[in-house]
Length: 65
Image (cartoon, rainbow, N blue to C red; front, side, top):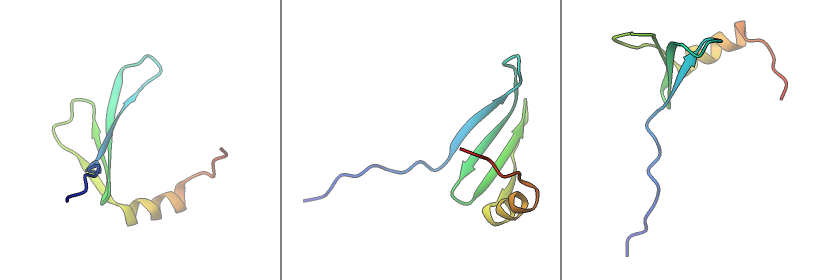
């Protein structure tokens, strides 16, 4: 007998909005990397998770919960 399971998402999309609620871009998080598309963008710009992690360690600010 087969066991049913949930299929994990291939990516998670989020809209980035300004203080007035207008869309300024989109971010897509995938298991392999992070992608960015500006408002009305026809394509995505991306970095691998390793490059993103290196960038965040070099440029990111420590956050509190």
